[in-house]
Each structure stands twice: as structure tokens, then as C-alpha cells.
Image 1: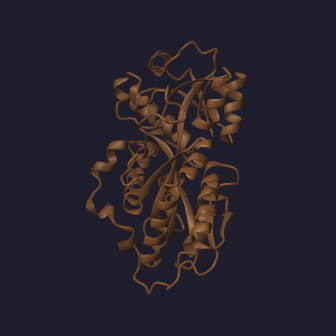
Image 2 (image 1 turned 90 degrees about the vertical axis):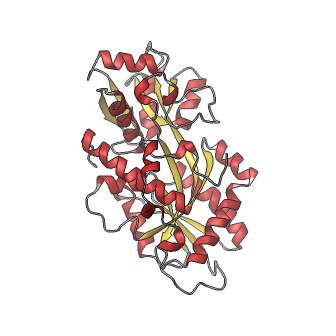
Image 3 (image 1 turned 180 degrees about the vertical axis):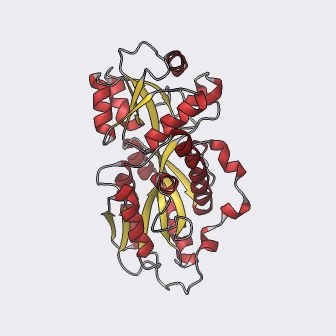
Length: 342
């Protein structure tokens, strides 16, 4: 993968084609978004915090800790991961927005941030005015899986069955307004399907019920599904990413399903870093450069892969464009599917 460009698998939680339509204004660099300030002579000058808006143990927390360990070694300063959960992740974002803009407080951002912008008409912060994108670093593919008692063995036949039985089939996800929910709704919209959403509180519970047969279909993170496929307890039909995953090279993408309406389908969960607006431009540049160094380390790639994820470095300029594209397209899905936050 060319880590200097946007990986094709990362082109949006929704329509991949949206990126190409962005105006030049959306392509602001991290440096131009930062308010000019005298930079510190030595950065970091003290311990650095990474605010994670999810609880410990998940993909976001995993990314923050793997990257944080290496940044700590590089910077010769402690890098502390702090989990600030609540309000769909908005509490953690608010904490970063209020922090001193000196590079010592980072947000572990994810595809949840554009989802919240699309869902909530009024937030206490502006994602694009109050924060500066630094870099995306990892991606976690999602996948559609079914219980083995389901007769369809590929996404094309599964789609045909859903079309023949509008509104009669149901699917489980990791929760309302999660990336997994949006990914399935995008599938429904593009393929013109109807199905009942059964939200769970977390991927583990949704996958467990799919294994047990309480639900037959589940959209979840790929890493939660692969062990069950290996054991014959689930059948993974397709992954949502634009390209196949190194973790499951034999599993086709939605785009490869043979369903014409899905030829441009692409959706992934991604993770990266942002800082408060006003952070000196040279500090933003240093953090971006050091993140690039860390993500290029073979041992980091090995750990990330072992966690069921993939390294996918995207610079701050491209990250900002991606976030903006996602917000616009997520708003369309919210409107069409009538998704509301819990």
C-alpha cells in the first residue's frame, strides 16, 4: 500500500465517489487550519494524552495504545491513553476541544465523529472548525455474515432472497447509528432492499446471537467474525471495504458480489488523530511525521494485523477531506433510512 495516498478501502463510510466531488475548500491542510502561534522549542515538553471516546479493549483503544507506546519511545515522554466515553463519543471530543492547543492532548478520532455530525443537528463543538486532522492510521473492515442454516452462500444469492422477501428478513448490528448499522443501510439503499434492523449493545452480543441462531444475519467487524467462520459457526459472505482484506483474502467484497447496484459500494471503520485548532502548525506537522514513522514499523504492522485490523496511513489533508465527504453522505443515509440516535 502506498501510505502517502488515501487507501481505496478508506474512501468513506459511505459512497466512495464522494471524495472526487469535494471542492478545493474542503482540502484544507492541517497547517492552514491551525491558528498561527509561536511554536514550542521542544515538543513534547511533558506527557501527552490521547483521548479515546470508546471504552478499553476495543479497536479504538487498541489503536491508541499500540501507537501511543511507540510515540512514547520516540518522544521520550509518557503517552497516556485516557478513555472518555459517553454521549456517543461527544464527551471525549469536547474534552479535546477545550484542551490547551499545544499538541499535548490528542483525540483518537474515528468514523464515529462524522456519524455524530450527521446525526446530531446541534453539537457543542464544530468538528471542522474546532479540531485539526493530523493523520489516519488504522482501518477495521466490516463484514456481513450469516448463520450456517441460511442456504445462501454468497452475497448475490442473499441479495436476491432479500428482494424476493421484502421486509421479512432481519439483520443484527453492533448498535443503533454505529458504522455497522450505516454499512447495512447503505447496502439496502444501493440495492433497493427492505429488512428489519435488530440493534445490539456491542458487536460481541450481536455475533453471539448470530452464532446461536437467535438472528440469522449480522453486520460486524471482520475480526469478530473470522474465528467463528474458521470454526464453522458462521459464514462470512462479503466484506464492506473497497478492496479485499489481508486478514481474509478469500472473502470477496460487496463490489465483487455481481450485484450491479453495489459496484461502487465501500465502507470501513477507520481510526486516526486530531488536535485542537490553534495547535502550532509545526507541531501538527511533527506529530503527523512521527505517526508516519510509527505506522511504517514492521512490528507495529504485525501487532495491528494481530488485532484484526490493517495499517492505513492517510495524511492530515486527506483525512480532513475524507471526514467531510463522509458527513455529507451520512446525512443522506440518515434522511433516507430515518436513523435517529438512541
